[in-house]
Amino acid sequence: MFLARALLPAAVAAAVVLGAALLAAEPASTQAQNARLGGQLLVATSELEGPTFARTVIYMVRHDARTGAMGLIVNRQLGEVPMAVLLKQSGLPSAGAKGSVRLHVGGPVEATRIFVLHTDDYAGPDTDKVGNGVAITSESSILKSIAEGKGPRRTRFTLGYAGWAPGQLEAEMEAGYWIVVPTDDAIVFDDAYETKWDRAMARRRISL
Image (cartoon, rainbow, N blue to C red):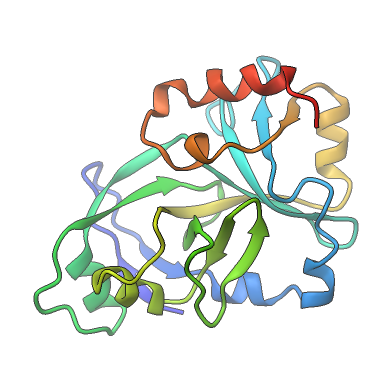
């Protein structure tokens, strides 16, 4: 895992840790059972109020009876951090590194951990393929690969994640707070944040 200090325009300056420990906690045999909601979009309905999840679109990473559910919000941006800063603070060579990384709010749990959601054309030592061409990585070597032009085609760096205890998400869905729709590469990765919720809600008409 790597430790870095994120320098954000909104004066967010907290220690951020790549979330390797969290992902590694689930054995491969359990990961194989994530078929129900893993790889789909969880969309907040108008019934869900409050600043944490109102109008959020969440890419579901896993969902099973034993460990509950985990997802990453994909429609809330934070700000830009120079790639050189992340490399240096991760203990990786930073000389000559160009460009920046845009950080996003992933959710309220472990809000200083970084998770990299990306297309599955990249695979590192701890990359987990979720499905539908999307994977998640939480090991700092992905930064080096990106800086060298060898990283995934599309990425989304998120701080924190959304998590539910076993049975909790099901209860919230039963109460009408969430709907599930098929995933869409554009909604997950593009920068049209203002329209992601509307586009996701429009996918209710598509049969699963």
